[in-house]
Length: 312
Length: 305
Ligand SMILES: Nc1ncnc2c1ncn2[C@@H]1O[C@H](COP(=O)(O)OP(=O)(O)OP(=O)(O)O)[C@@H](O)[C@H]1O
Ligand SMILES: [Mg+2]
Image 1 (cartoon, chains in turn blue, orange):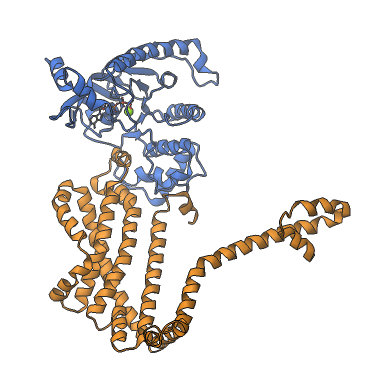
Image 2: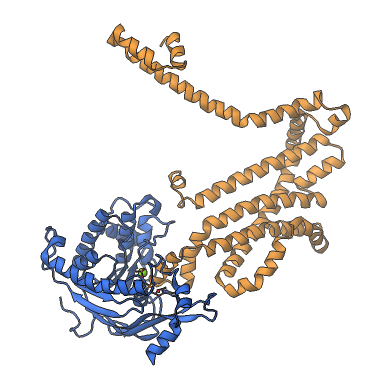
């Protein structure tokens, strides 16, 4: 798999930074800014599977939102196929941790959701074509026969399969996944990891996969990008070479795997310790940090001053 | 399937004694007691259901009995005039139907409430969507809406009558007014409580604002909107009857008041009975509609489809 060195990388992050304005609180009446990401530069080749790890609050979701085009960077550029992205597009699809299925739609109708507008060639699919595609992609994720089930009638693993099918159905080049398997039990997770690899191999998508699991990151990724604790910077990108992973041996207990795993673990551990020292506990699943405001108030310097200082 | 076994089975500790006794008597005898027991439990279940049914309708039956016999045996002669027994009311109802009067009044009331209700639903859903979508519009309108919402519709009845006369317009308007607020408030609440994750998911698929509204926000708000519509249905009937009592030439409210002033007391009760049944029916229908549109919310609802 070639990477970085090709003519134009599929995705190119150039010195990307993102700040948030923190709402005024009791301790911080005038509000302040929080630097979530800083100076991220990374190229991802077409067809590459890259995983992204980092302590909680390091800006992984923020980075994914930027790639999805849901938000714009404050500094730098996000390029896809050499062109700066201006918003969400059909060349990219997002899979969220909490499935984000439309509960009033059946599994098939959920998968067909992205097919309802005009396609990339401006053509609209007929109802029958959409249903056919939905069935095809549900089949791809191993859910044939569940077309007419509503999300509340499906297990967590099945819901996430539907979500993956929905993302794949409108045939994006890039799959952006934000801790997609975090809410699943270990067995289901392993099974879905396997299937994701299979789908990746057969479709050749470029995949950016965020995870908290070091094992998962090493197992899935061709490279593992480690983010530093806040403000999120690219600490290191670890190349993973596990040889041929398509066999059914237990790759995870391989010496090479253990080595890679340890490497990522040490990198991440440093950052987690730093984050803990900074008093940053686990962030809520919605991305909000309950500890944000008091932490700002107690420090001698506010985050706004800090980042200004850093900029100076 | 003999009577003694049956009583034994339905009695205190049914299962053990017959089962233990039968094998000694011979294998050929085994099936009947089993069937008996099954029948017994069936009867018991049936009795339980029937019992529950009787219990559930008991209050109604008691009430109807009281209505039938109370006036004759308990009330004084002067009260009896104003409180005719049930059969007289039913007879009056029958003759009102036979003469076609009840149908006319019912049609008048239904037309008014349907038009008023329809206008209210369309207007309230549209405004609710706007208010929920545009925060600034909400901040601007909210205080005024609060004032009107908390003003009882009936308090404004004289105003409607003064401005719009006692014709159809004023009645339709007051029904629309009364039905407007429950729908409006529930529409706003429904849109506000759309899961932000779903909006993010839809946005990431590149949906325009309009499509987002049509495909995500509206369907997700529909159950809440229908709760508002159900509430509006009840209050619009209430207000309409009152409005028809004040000034009208047709309608159930008019029938009731007119019968009272013409001293046709059984007719009056027939009108009241009709209003009660109409209210029940409308509520039942709206609950069914609401359930239909919320069926994706619960497992139970979806199975009924
Ligand atoms: N809309 C927002 N407004 C203000 N601050 C935000 C916003 N979104 C994220 N942040 C902050 O930016 C930082 C990075 O958040 P982000 O959700 O990207 O972290 P994460 O790496 O995905 O964390 P986790 O692993 O817990 O999901 C956090 O400190 C968070 O509080
Ligand atoms: Mg996150």
